[in-house]
Image (cartoon, rainbow, N blue to C red; front, side, top):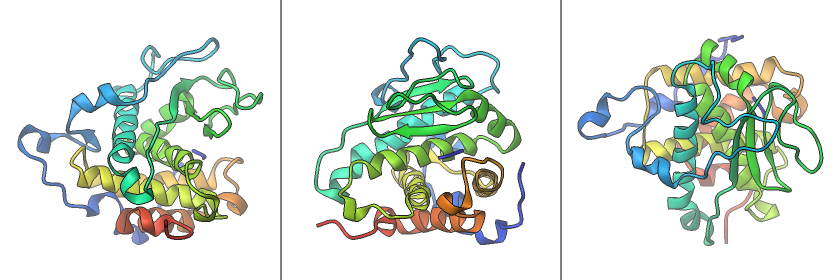
Length: 251
């Protein structure tokens, strides 16, 4: 993906995170933005693993309060959505990608022999893992809000899903399709009552998509789309579910 703010496109975000009604029962209704309803789901999420030269998301220090928990929550929620629904959409079994978690700067896991970029997040297709720079996560968490973490992780998970589909179902606009799948994943988790949306999520997601469109050199408009296109793609997935994101129908 690949993860400030210029809020000129917020008028186009009516179908973002705040739009799906969530009927959470009991104390869960009091949880704030994109919090897990069912904490035990964390136990079944892919492990956040550690390797020499980069940081485990379970032991990193000096990040905003709650950020590391939100990373684990986002992993559990998105992975849980696909565990429940992947076979329903695609007629085959789902297997989770490995989630490496956070690294720092250029000191991170290699992908096909290449070192990671600082201030980046990515899915490594040859080795089927997701990872992100904790400096990227921390900067967005502070300036944009908690929804930033969910957007970044859901987008990269969209790339992992593309790797599990037939080629004809993967759009040539792969980055926009990953944005669309991110919207479908987060909306689906809310329908499943494993996430509870918050009114602030609408603005935070739009700001996040605007930021990653306009600020970083590795998110060139020629391959990722501009802010309006990315917000539109996210909205399409959020409102239209997974089939709205596919280049062709399964079957």
